[in-house]
Length: 291
Length: 319
Image 1 (cartoon, rainbow over the protein chains, first blue to last red):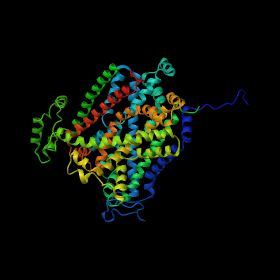
Image 2 (spheres, one colour):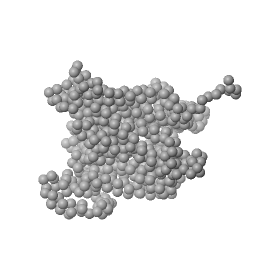
Image 3 (tube, one colour):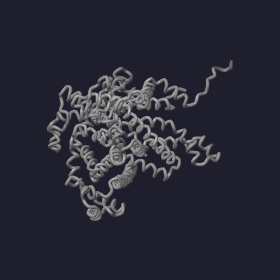
Image 4 (cartoon, each protein chain N blue to C red):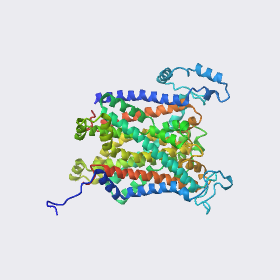
C-alpha cells in the first residue's frame, strides 16, 4: 500500500473525453442511430432484395403491402430498398465532403496561424471572401453543372465548406504557438512542416473533430436540398433528397409512404450527427471537463 | 471607435472586390461564352462565334471582368439571356416580393424566439425548457423543404385551413400587391421560414439570457427588492438581446438559402424561384446578379452587426 493518499492512474485527454462522451446518453443514442443506418444501408441490401433499379410502371405508387413493406414510388421502385441505396449516397457525400473540407481547412488554418503577418492576413481574407458567398447558391450553380456523381458532388461541397475548420484551426494554432512545447520543438530543430504536422495539428485536433460531425450533418441537408430542387445526382444514382423530391409531387395524392419514411431517415441521421457533435464539444472542452 | 469603423469599412471593400472577382470568374468558367445559349441549339457555329465576338466574349478574362465591373458600378447588371428583359428589371420586380416574405418571417421569428429563449433561461432544466430544446433540435435537423411539406400536409391537406401554395393567388399576378392581397396564402410560407430561424435564434437567446442572469446587476436588482417581472423586463431582456443583434446580421446567408427553398416549396414568385428558373435555363447573368447580391448583403450584414453592437453596447469598444 502506497503511503500519502490514493494513487490515481493518469489518463490521457482523449481517454477522459471518451469517458465523458460515453456518459452522455444522447450522444450514445446518436452513435447508435448512425451505426443503425450504416448497417441498414450497406448490409441491408444483402438481405433484402427489393427492386430499386428497373422502372415498373405497372406497380407504381403502390401502398405498403407484403411484397414491399414501404410501398413503391412513381417509378415502381421499392421504397425500402431505395432507402438503403439512397442512404449510401447521402452518407457517402456527407462524410467524404466533411473529410475534404477538414483536410483543406486544417492545413489552410495551420499555415495562416503559424506564418502570421501578411501571409496570415491574405489567407484569412480569402476565407472571408468565400464565406461571404451564400453556400447554397454556389453549390447549386457548380453542382448543377458538375455534381452528377457522388464523388464530384462530395468534392464540390467539400471545397466550399473548409472555411469554418480553417478559422477554428487558425485560432487554436495562434494560442498553441506561444506554448512551451512548441518552443521546445523549435529549439530542438524541428522543421516547419514537422512543427505543423506533428505538433500543432494533433493538438488543434479537438476543435476539428467537433466540426467534422456538424459538417457531415450540414452536407447531408445540403445534398437533400439540391435533390429537392432537381440539381442533385444523376439517374441511376440517387440520394434521400432525390427520393423526397419525387415524393413531394405525390403528397397531394395522399401517397404518404413516398415522403415520410425518407424524411424520417434524413432527420434522424442529421440529428444523430448533431447530437454527437454537441457531446464531443462538451467532452473535449477543457474548461467543462472533470479532472 | 471611428478608426475601427473605418478600418472595418476598408476590409469590407477589399472583400467586396474579391467577392466580385471570384463570383464572376466562377460563372465565367462554368458558363463559357453565352452565344450558344442565347442563339439556341440550331444556330450555326459561325453565327455563334460571331455573336460572341460582337458582344466581347472573346476578350481576355480581366478585360471582360473590367467591363462587367464598370457596368456594375453604373448600376447595370446586364441582360438576361432568356427573358427579354434587363437583369435590373427582373431583380427590381422580384426583390420586393422576396423581401416581403423574408422580412415578415424574420419579424415573426424574433417575436417568438426572444420570449421563448428567455422563458427557457429563467425556467432552465425544467420539462418546458427541455421540450422546447428538443423541438428546436428536431427543427434544426430537418431540411427546410420537409418542414414546409409537413405544414402543407397538416394545415392545407388534412385540416384544410390554408391554401397549399402561394401559387393559386400570387403567381398569375407576380407583383408585391398579389402577395399582400391574400394574407392566408402567406401564412404557411412565413411559418416555414420563421420556424427554421426560431430553432437557431432561441438556442442563442437561451444561452445569452443564461449568461446575463449570472451577472451582478441582476443580483443587485433582485437585492434591492425589484419585482422579478421588472428584473426580467428592465435588466435581463435588454442585455440578453445584444448578442442577437450580431446573430441576425450574421444569419443573412441562412435567410437567403431558406428563402430560396421556401419559395420553391410554395411556388412563391420571388428571387428564389427566379434563381432556380435561371439555373434551369443556364441564364448566367441572372445567377451572377443574385449571387453577387447575396454576397453583398452578407458583407453589409456583417458590417452592420458590428456597428450595431458597438452602438448598442457601450462596454464594447473593439480595437
